[in-house]
Image 1: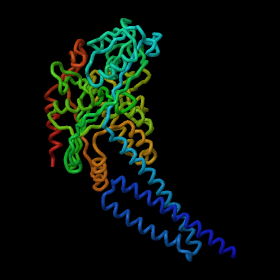
Image 2 (image 1 turned 180 degrees about the vertical axis):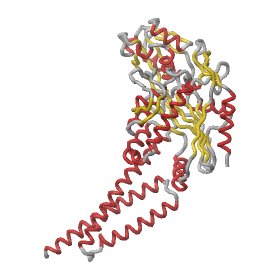
Image 3 (image 1 turned 30 degrees about the horizontal axis):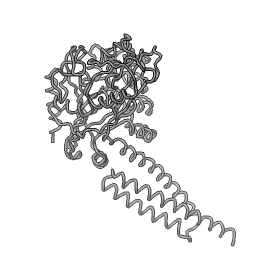
Image 4 (image 1 turned 90 degrees about the horizontal axis):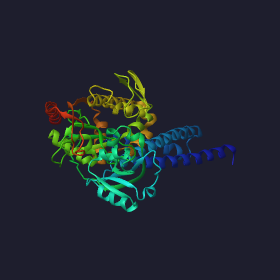
Length: 482
């Protein structure tokens, strides 16, 4: 065999190997495209035609032995480039499928309960509390009974029942009890309402109870009918399934026919009647302590509308996303040290913020005369800055996988995959320009007793029902527009 023939045989062998690699990657790529199912029919048809033509051309060049070596080498190079495109596409498709599989798991929620002691105590475990006084908030909400039973089976403490959670927190700081047992939501309230509680206490034991979520979805044809989504930003870190106070409360009204989106923000301290309760009203944020369904139904009662879906994010979501995209630029109209994080400094003017700073800025109300009203504005500014940065082509290309990976574990919705894919498919097909408008309801600063804290007055915002009526009318106007 001549040297030229040997070289040609070698090229033919390489050609077949590259072709086999091409076919394998093509099958995987198309399988993921079909599984994801977000391409409109016309684009999918074009993809099929392009793939068939490409396959025939490469097969003819790489497999036919009489093709000249120079042409075959060009075919090999071209096939390697196409294989690279397939590998890139496969990673993006897999990330997208994995993301969609992760965010729609709303079947269960996690309720956390803590044993808390003073920082200066010698207690570091449940065994250290034998024969010590433990205050227990007497509640029947959620899985409190089950959690109480579990903690009492693990300890040999002298237990004292409390009817008021804030008195319980004060008594721990005043050394009237050695430890307390409360839910995560009530502990967060202690941090907010009791000075120095966070700085002077520590958690030594956690009980997490997984419970089945209540189905509250009101399914519609999302590409043809208007729908409302409740956006809940829970004030906790860690698992998105955690039951906690809702720090951000927003109703997003989407009209797919007029391509309008209306954002309606409701202050967290709005003084409302929690759905299913009688007697005292409560802060809207406290509804989240009883599950996202309580928040949804309470807002349905307030605005006299149906809320079809919800989406829930937590503090971890915001911090991670902002850091991944390289920070955001936000304008602050004041300089201050945030109440929620004293290590952060906000300066007046345009400021580049990392995740930690953006979170503190979005949560701040104490630095402003308008309190909750200004916090709502800050939250909308942060949300807008994140969306603008995320939707830039450069950010999406460089950070796509890491963004989806972060959101998958920090985002939860009861909208099913079919509806999500339909929305994406319609957006790709029509590429409509959406009009986004926003509004917020208002009220007056006050203090009052609440359903969750019946013996102590807390800061609340008494609703201005004229603004509620006007907001409801705007929601219905956008919802019903043709």
